[in-house]
Amino acid sequence: GNSVTQMEGPVTLSEEAFLTINCTYTATGYPSLFWYVQYPGEGLQLLLKATKADDKGSNKGFEATYRKETTSFHLEKGSVQVSDSAVYFCALSGSGGSNYKLTFGKGTLLTVNP
Amino acid sequence: GAVVSQHPSRVICKSGTSVKIECRSLDFQATTMFWYRQFPKQSLMLMATSNEGSKATYEQGVEKDKFLINHASLTLSTLTVTSAHPEDSSFYICSARGRGRYQPQHFGDGTRLSIL
Image (cartoon, rainbow over all chains, first blue to last red; front, side, top):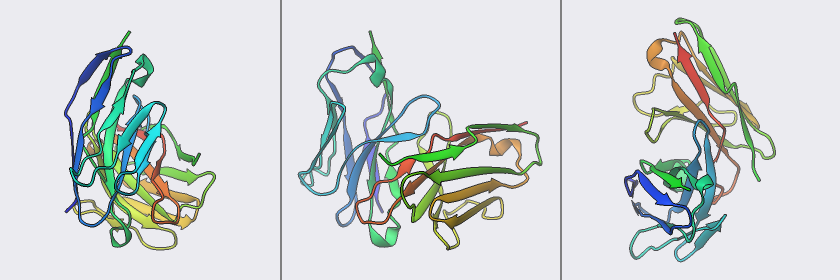
């Protein structure tokens, strides 16, 4: 079955530091890949997505590239801010018969200190 | 962007009460809606998937008589926790996706359910 493995946290950085959160996946076929962010006490917000190999998703300074050869979708940001503190979830979606269910990683808590 | 509204955001009630949570897609037609449960500091656990006009498909281990799901229209799904007990206390999150292969799921803000 499908699975997502992401870097375990917590991750603590200083403001303006470089961020990488690793994510690798196992899936059959050609899944779509997502990064979601969850702020305390809230639901998940879609941060970015990629639907095919070599696609790069980007939003709010965050980027991730769909690498089929390494089955990875690592999240990066060049300069984090305090407001980026949240839990980040990597996820994949199958297609068709799976009803587009999402398979989530366990989440990575990011804390950015001023 | 796509907006999903979930209501209420917080519920506190006595054991034995039934609680209904609503999930609405505000600016798109949600052909599929999903209900999740999230325990503290953990990932989301999918409870069930519902397609408009069809019965929900429950994940293994989720009691369908305990967690009643209705998806009567393309913009509304409800989750009713029947005869709730303290062990049902949790954070419940819905999501919705529109028609199309590459459509992402859009999430509500969640409902914090506390059963006393």
